[in-house]
Image 1 (cartoon, rainbow, N blue to C red):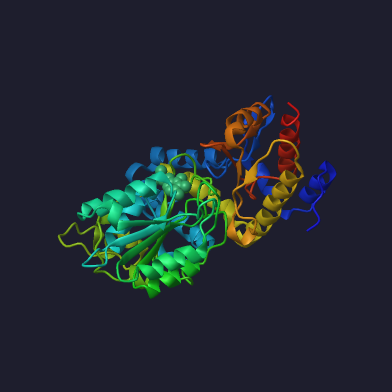
Image 2: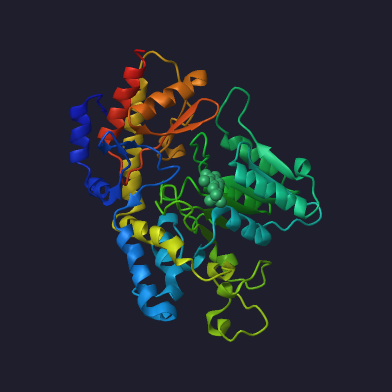
Length: 421
Ligand SMILES: *Cc1c(COP(=O)(O)O)cnc(C)c1O
């Protein structure tokens, strides 16, 4: 790869980029009358320009049809989940019946732990990554307490080795094999939100199955970012939110994957609701829950149409390309950011994210030590929207669907100027 630290190189890369057409489909926040440089799509994706009209469509259909909108709306509300589910499936390598668009990430994590965390006898432990997203930590802590276990005993965290930032695959595999008599569930992030480390989901799933346990993943930072093959990897379940790389909008509906081999089993323990009931008897309003023989058998409630329209609109854009194409651009774009950062001299900083691009997605996490906050403020003043996490980490995530090589180059220019202060 022969990158060059020049604007003309960045311009030529943008000209050759066939995905560049998507950028104009999004609204960018403004800074001094110009589009800000937005590298925060790992936190909240941008608004698709088509969304306003899509929301207006639902308002019009409600106004015109009222209850008949369930059948007569332009996008009948009865099937609204499926307008998101079907385009979602190829992004994660799932069959359509393995996907359920519902609730929010943490809610789905709790719901699926009811089905896949089944502590019994010696087998009650959960392996997770040290430094997992707090909501996952709280979900796991409260779930093990629900069954009367002590979190300090029931939860095993795999941490980076002293002096390292990343978790070694060999250490996770070793922990799984050590716990093969006591392990009930492995719950890992697909990509760690803080370091940007992408875990080997297939290897972790295989090892967990060998230990006789279920493997579940939180894909908040992986979905819409890296290609996934959840079905082929035989992942048991996964959950995600859709307001990060998927651009579904603040608090947008989340999703769940349940592998076909489990989804078809009607006797799995679960929390039931009428929208998870078999459709042929759903409206008979009779006693006796009969789940759908698919991931939708975990649904509870009718579609939250206004909370799904953002995701539906954004997925139309993803549907006009492929995650493979987006990922190919992403590797090159984030690689360019890494290359440019390596040209910087002056303020010392460390890139926490793996150097190997097979172990990361779009995000690079830069550790600036005690200068982090001040540098983040300077970036903000210069019109770069990025994310700051204590202690001293700035996360930069060029999203291939709307970011450009010029965005990345301008960030480099701005950071180089900060260094002269
Ligand atoms: C963003 C994120 C969440 C958010 O959970 P919500 O229930 O959608 O608020 C959870 N886990 C991870 C790893 C995240 O990055």
